[in-house]
Image (tube, rainbow, N blue to C red; front, side, top):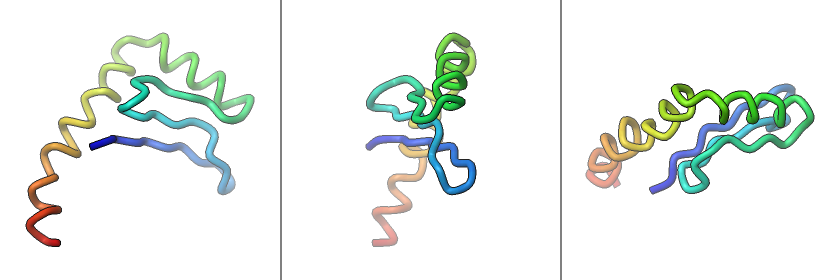
Length: 67
């Protein structure tokens, strides 16, 4: 299971967090700045990492039961 949190502006993805990478990655100039700031904030980064367990692992059984 992989948790991905993408941020878009005007249909352009500028930053993404992927649980398999474990950090934010920027795709535009502003996205790189955001990713650097968020990666240097331990509380923000740990919140993003915890979302895999909070959202994905919590709901996986519901998804499989409804398939």
